[in-house]
Image 1 (cartoon, helix red, strand yellow):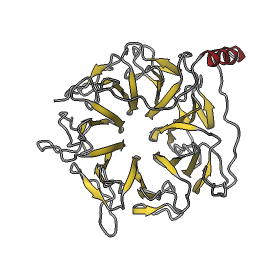
Image 2 (spheres, rainbow, N blue to C red):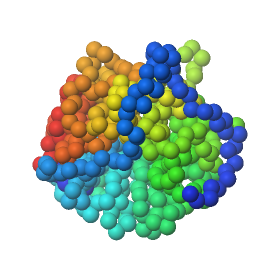
Image 3 (cartoon, one colour):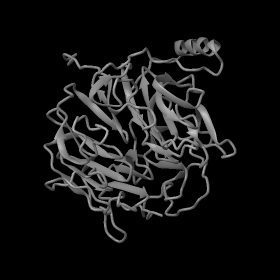
Image 4 (cartoon, helix red, strand yellow):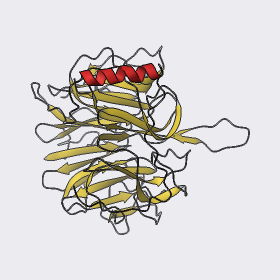
Length: 441
């Protein structure tokens, strides 16, 4: 079992480049499988007409509580928050040092401008454009300044600098990381065995290297275990890496090769929020000795509607069915008076924050991650978190846990607490469908 954090501050319209789509299929996004057939679509059209126009702008935190969190991110089994004072506070599994401090030491990062986390790794963009990372480095995710670059299984609780020019954004995945520089260039490092860093040479570990294949202005990256997504500033989504089913692909398209290092667009536009889960390996029970099946999924908000793709066993795509979808498929939600504004994904769970501050989730509820009693083990569509009444500005999803940043600056969590993900300073095996407030000391 990993170590549990004690919640101290971790003093933590341009011209478009033409790409070879590599035979990528580009269908229109699937409108999904409505549980109520065409009647549902007619009802939603009426609801759309009654709603205020969709506004993708992130809601601000008002900081009526102290300490006040202003940003929230999630790894597989840990969460981190950027605080109003520029420090970071992390909780959950600290087995690889993802919380940014050792068992008895003080936090060591401050002046944080933006956070990102995935797997057991956390990175921070500082006010001066420097990037520091800590936690797991099994695929070279930390971008340690060695030559040649290294990967190791050691615990790295101390934030280490990544050798980069000034950055404007950092995004971490379970096997690598990418930074958008202030120059607009995109640099990535870490594992590349499925060309998930956008390089044809599938070497295992790489130092921060420019992604020459992609020249469109980048808003952010979403890195899965074996595939990567990039959201352009114009709202388009591109992907590269593993395309083949069974590897947890989140490419959202097809290609004539199982691994595609060249960026190609997914049939989505005007995307304002994008998220993906890490790959989970599921054993395949077969007399033919078939390999394990990897599942992962991604979701996006397009013009106030959720579209998801990938593979899910328990309904995390929110489309009314379990199973895989190669292409973006429209998800179904309960709230028809507000718009989905932000999506988050982890494990076999997806959640969405709506423009009225409410939260809905889909997928695996065995640990209470949907906020429902575990007697209902899953939901195939997005459904409200019934016991959470706070107005939310951001939601983050770990493998079996969910946390939400409330408008006043407090953070509330529910689901699994096996590694201390609920921020109570304790661990247990019970499901926790009732949200509890994270206790910062």
